[in-house]
Length: 143
Image (cartoon, rainbow, N blue to C red; front, side, top):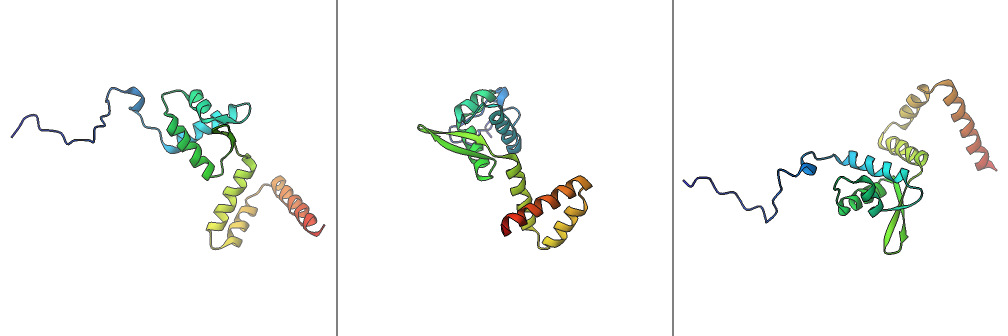
């Protein structure tokens, strides 16, 4: 037997063990949160290059684009053409929360039970606000 044993060929890509930036992999949720936080700090729509620069830490441009695209698919950001690239903006937080709530409600078979549980858990001020908003929505429909 040959010593040391040969290593299987890895397709030409070798990772450096000493590369401190890769020693701790960040989860997808953590990176999404960091990208959203950077976009919220921007004074307007920001490019992926700006986000990459703002985050620092050796994050690849393609990784930033991937994260932004996933956030777009989730409705957490919007984008508009800016020359040959895109400028990204965080989505309206209230609208995003409402979409999440609808998604949870749509996933349940007993919508009435889910809504009843939600309403009974509201504090009196929120319950009053919800009643007012429902009244306004009905008035707009009748209107």
